[in-house]
Image (cartoon, rainbow, N blue to C red; front, side, top):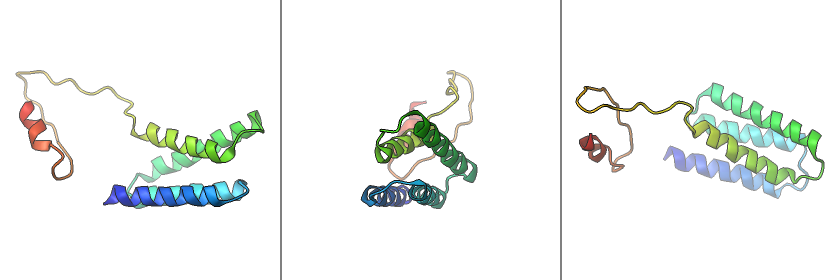
Length: 122
């Protein structure tokens, strides 16, 4: 349910961005505020949301300085997708489990996502 609501809110904010005729700093701030609000409602860490907003804002400022002919709407959408993907990309290597040795592992998932099946394979 939470992911569905997050997707709906992100889609609504993208639609609002696409429906505006002029993309200025006010529109960008409102868009980033809506995205941040949606992420916070989905229980994303406040620090991560703040970092996401600042990274997008910094990259927007750099892009404005580099090229004046870029499509700001598409650029903002690409920035959001890349920054959300960066949030989900692990920055550490996964732990390798050794056979014959005891390990404590917590499996988390929705109903029917295959937790029991995965646990029995180890």
